[in-house]
Image (tube, rainbow, N blue to C red; front, side, top):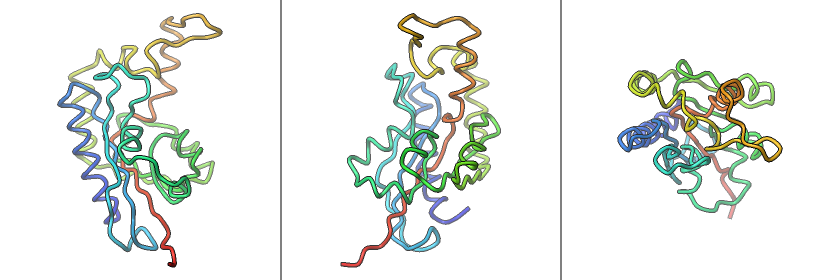
Length: 193
């Protein structure tokens, strides 16, 4: 694991624990700016951090990475092109070249999709991340089987509510990828004044 990854992971873990302590899913993210010209140089600067608040706020969008992006505020779009985050849609939308995942043994996401699209995916298999999610799953199996774990509070298809067990389980398997303690790291190229 690179030095900046360790810094980002420590912030993401702290956020994940905050989420757990609030009764939510223990997923945290950190948005890190690297002042150097590569991931190995320069000082990491925390731009924003957050944790999953979907259960606490009954929100369909407050994933850990979204909370971190919100905390960072409005940034120049070009910043994201040299960054790392976890949500596949945002990764592909912002052309983010590198994703660092704390663990994927409890939930395996769409890492292969990202790799096929040219994204470097690094799984660090952090023991603390694994234990945090494993404990959460053991203590709260009802959440994994509830609609809180799905993309939205209520899913609709052609204007009609969709809440059959078959459809719900299919939706659940498609959104599992974002539920991990992760690092979001941004590297901004040095600019000549």
